[in-house]
View (tube, rainbow, N blue to C red):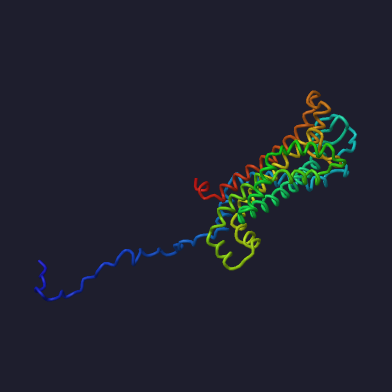
Length: 321
């Protein structure tokens, strides 16, 4: 047996005391990587964006169609998509990729020029509507009071007016119809719902601490709106523009289909209207109306799918699910 030390005398060897677990963790193995630092908000958003299939697929479809509309005319023989190609009502072939109409017009030539007009009217109409919606929504939501009541009343008036009926009347009595003019009138009539949504978001942000600090520092109203409030709504504003972009394309296609589209260019809606007018369905010329119909559906559908993907990227709750 081991001899015990006399009572009251210290042990010959000091006893080692255990260190708290919080003070000393387990040693790192040789070559082990240290825990990575948290990503910045921008890099974190990009990280999830590159891994969201809805966003990637939607943007890929839009990009392919956009490049087709921009560079497709370079593959054509001439600048006139309505020119006679030498063959009437022939199906798709190596010479005519999308076939020809009963008038001998190349459907592929009309399709690529129609894509260009479709994106142009979407940019113009959606851009104008987004600018008006942001101006009305920002100032109404931030200033409040009489200005808010006036702008809200104006928004409600435009909201209840049947915009499609107004566009029908304007286009019917307009002497020269073009894609920019069409986009202008679409933008002037499609902003109210976006303005109401932006107003609600601005109203919730105007009481935040960073806005109060900017107000106390003496910043002007427009500086507070565009330097403090707008950057915190950038993702929401971008998604709103996508919805306005797609909505402008649908409205323009509706006007084109009933014969109130541009008179100086070709669009996908006008292709559908021409195919319907000259009985392409009854004659079995499916290649005349299928490409423009698929093109409109693909552009608008891809935009909305990409918008859903952006919502999942910017919204942490949807991102985690």
